[in-house]
Image (cartoon, rainbow, N blue to C red; front, top):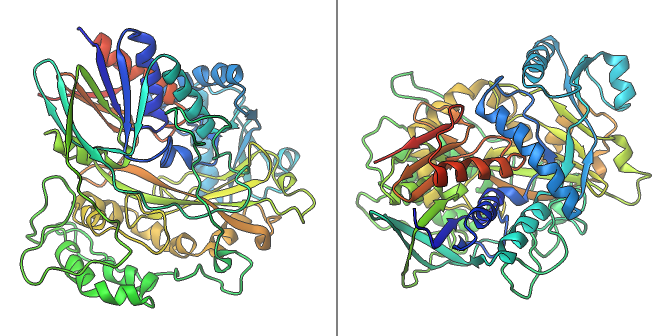
Length: 558
């Protein structure tokens, strides 16, 4: 295979790791990384608690387990060589009842089968020796679990790409992909300005989400940083007079219907509960009613846009758009470039680009907002000593987004989170905004409603903590009661690209589809950041050597 021009679409940690892998294997090729954002790790990769996830609960011998283990094997020497912060601090999973204790037994068996070193169960006395402020009936201890700075890791990988002659083109949106016999044509345009992320506190060091010092990998005269400017509104602080987040409170959720038609969630109630008092909401309420009528019942005979994007209007007046709330979609002339090899790691836009290239739409991407909180008030004696390493809840298969952790950050302070809820936009970081096209894509997908039905019972139990920061902190205090709610502040917000299939099952594995010289990364394992280097290695093996992984999921199309 003759390869002189290579394109990687997506500048998250996996995309950049893959670009680095390709520059090493194809030293004579010109490698270009495209991203519609204006920086590296703009989305999920740059918004984590920094846990190096060993995939404790992965099925023994699964591709996820092997990628996580290989990922750590590659990660540790890399961060050591580059001086990227990495601290092996240990992790406790805390059971609060007998059901969770039983799940810990299962996780222990899996971890031992996957050869994760040192994992063991601790009784209450042993638990307190490791973490004096932990509370529970039983704990699983993984002593070698670590934290690091994944944004700094992404930047170090990008530095290698640049040093090898690769280039980064930010602010460039890939709009289409055409596959020919021995080349791939990318259609692209200048991206519209992205919605700003919410501000965080004055010091982001607790989460380890900030970038390292130095120039951007793109060569621009600016620092790459995953945060944004500005201060948090005082109403959002835990210690404010309001018990619930500003304009966000527990929303009524109604699940009804049968197995043949699918469940129904009144999307209007969710939006009215969050934004009903806002003037701009009243301007678009008719539009929301129309969307909900068309998309609420998945068995209704609606039409669906083939790309899963903007909802199609079937008649009547053109719906009004929210002034200043929906992202402006400026259209610029498209440009076209031809490459010998293209790999798409587009994360939040993976399904849409796959559909644009003629692949099956599924698995579809459903965005979930993950909020993190921090404690770094200098008035406290030493908030980090409340937790020495990582204290987490026990994973619950029936409630996949209910996991919580308190993490001693890589540079001090504590990180609490994630607090996860369905997002109203794939790239909407402001609390009061939404994207009608993204909402239509989510509520118009039958798999989303099936997932909602499967998790309805546990989702209802956790609904208040999902939308109330004070309720969320109270959930944290159940297993770390020493947390002082008055010192908790909002920190980073990320949007997770969760792949879901038509049956409502979460796709938490590496899934890659190939046609000719185009490869689409459709989904990544839950330990995506931890296993980034291993994932890049595996994808490069498949693309360049044609080797199929017997233990992985890699589909060929066409």
